[in-house]
Length: 228
Image 1 (cartoon, one colour):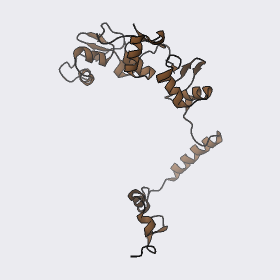
Image 2 (cartoon, helix red, strand yellow; image 1 turned 30 degrees about the horizontal axis):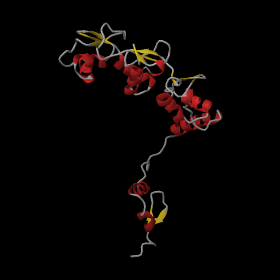
Image 3 (cartoon, helix red, strand yellow; image 1 turned 120 degrees about the vertical axis):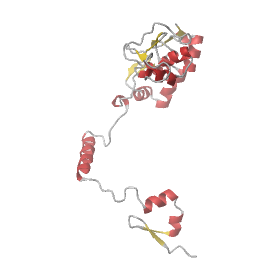
Image 4 (cartoon, one colour; image 1 turned 30 degrees about the vertical axis):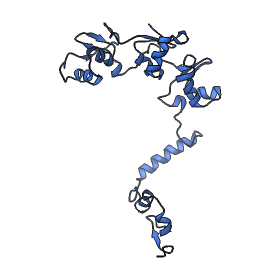
């Protein structure tokens, strides 16, 4: 059967031969016949809003919003032998290398020379998972430390704090991150940016694997990683 002259009419009114259409992927065929936005019309107010936003970008000499470097809320400043830079991009530009190379320096090859800076007085992550926990046996620096001491998992401690389970009402968060007792498996560790209450806390801030920090501390790598 000759299909070269058989035409398929698409949703936008264009026509293509059956031979061409049959070679498309099922997804492309479906989108061509039934576009996801078919029948949807943008309101005038939405068009005006988008237009104003785009004009503001162009008026600043930038055709699109820029969220890199310090403009990115998640960006972290980096300490280097040549001083502090506002972002990894800034370090990459200064040293004329790629972002990937800077990451490699921070996490693998030069962690004592290149590392993320920490705001003054903030050597632990500020979140519920890093808050101190009061238990029937005293205060622990984190839920994980309490879980290790009581021989349960992290989720069990969380359930007790939330008021469910065997010890509901006996576990709760403390305002301070300091602890009256320490879990025997939790060790304070010194790093190039200061001391941390645990390897995990150091790992969260430095973005280096816990196992790697543990090995460096045991070997007293470069004299800046060691257990306290």
